[in-house]
Image (cartoon, rainbow, N blue to C red; front, side):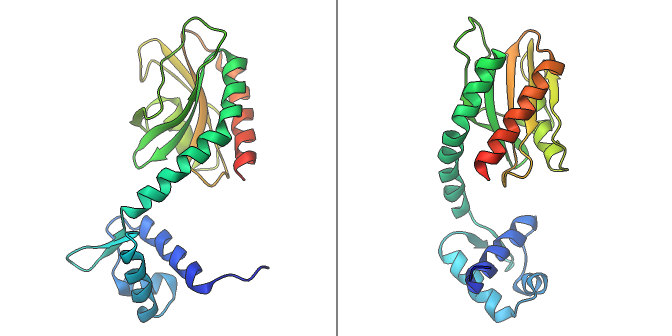
Length: 208
């Protein structure tokens, strides 16, 4: 096993436990969760706070800072670049708009969209489009992926009248996301579903 930086490892683990703590953590709570001395945890928090990755409330509780947003934002271009050929192949194969959608809090956020070239009409699905995770095939597929379920999810008219969608989660890709298609009119989920699952598996391999 390669040598690692213990300090960096602890700092990353600290960010992970803070991300899972909705109300933030005190130094003592974070110390107990990590099994690390309070003085060390305090130094880690102070360093992360200096870089905007951690913020401290008036009550002395620490939570993830807004600095992580700029880091997360830099990942989107990478995701789009890697996903582009997979989405293009899926869009042309199905004849429908293909998209990569990620979880952003309680919402599903489209980060990459490819429209088919061989159809006259298609859904105008745009990068930056948002909707609740519990609505639409893309969001529900992401939620299913949290349980390790790789199967596809279908929806009809939930986000736009007459639009049908099929999506599958990226399981094991290190990001909460789904890949799917959306079209005006009928989409035979029994035919399209396996293609979407295959695309999700291919993209997962490319991101691994």
